Length: 284
Image 1 (spheres, helix red, strand yellow):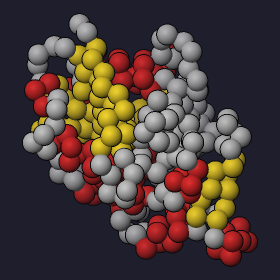
Image 2 (image 1 turned 30 degrees about the vertical axis):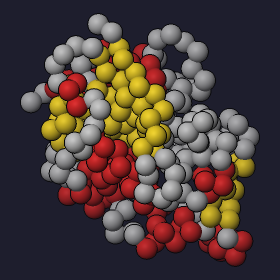
Image 3 (image 1 turned 90 degrees about the horizontal axis):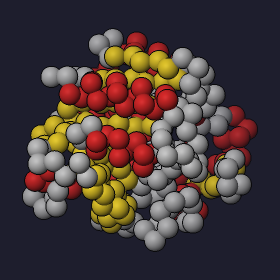
Image 4 (image 1 turned 135 degrees about the horizontal axis):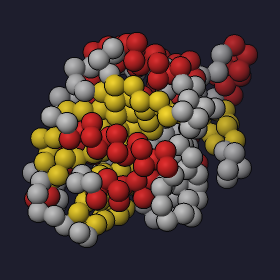
């Protein structure tokens, strides 16, 4: 078996920036279920162990498609880390949903260059952290999505915004900064990020979307996640009682991966996750 990779494909985004996309699949002739992966906040498609994860899903018989949200701070020339902080500052949840729509339209369109290898009637979404919230919202509103997986997902976008004096200062200044603990960059957010959320709050309410889901849903979370508490996973399960909740005892937000990931194999937690997801999607 040979794993084929198409890296850094520039899809035309809806907001003037490309959606930089990767496709991983094996050379086996059968049509493969498609698994689309959305990264999280201050994330990117080549972070940490995501490439090893993509290769493993390809070995397991999937076509894995991952992409950078167009305003994540990366560029087509430099899709890793955050060379374009101005773009990062202009991001919104709606832009990320639009980017995911672009990827779905590409895969299901007549000109998809990998159609002969893919079962485009069998598409699953998977998202990590903030990307988990994004795929929940999208899965609830798009009938092309047949199954849904979240990894360490947030359960509420709204409660992650500042409040009180911090929110007032953000409004007054028009911009606020968050330090990236790894790169030490001061990462900007325009106040429009908050106003765009408020304008679209009903659509962006994860609890509403989770309750409306009519497809199989797998919730994966580490019990020792310091970034997005495991209670977020429990809330998702409460809102969608039919969902499958898979907790990894003692695991953290990235399931023991980090960036850069220099190892040649995945962390043990990741191996368990991929095994569980493979069974979940292939279970008819």
